[in-house]
Length: 197
Image (cartoon, rainbow, N blue to C red; front, side, top):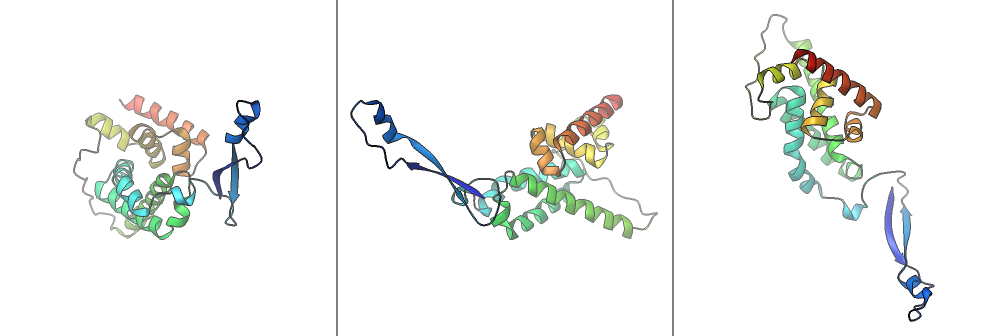
């Protein structure tokens, strides 16, 4: 991981209004490399504590997962599970360029695994109840149905790009896919939504 800092040029001596006077205040960027290898994000001293990160991002990650999964209780359960995993690895996760994206992706992966296990164990004739509408879901019933009809992959890019207003790069990082894949999934999702609406 690289930590950036500044150091004064020790060799410069201020000389009145001379051209060399500016050298005394020249800042030289120094790079400090640790043995832990390549990493991203702010220096360890500038990273937020896990408690601060949790307080700032738990609600937004939970709401985003609710929209992506179409299930409020599962969305917040997934967010809590992902936050617990982030806490266990906070010294690593806090160094990522987008720790919130890592938590989102971890929660999404956990929820998808949970849904697969539940589907395998559920009797075939059991009816599933539709979750109650919440304020987090789009107000337009047609739009809500159209978004719910998208595949998980398409719904995830729509939610992250339009609900969270994340960039293509942030969305790609959070989902663990290439930016080009985000663009193509988003384009296809918008085509499907346009056709349904």
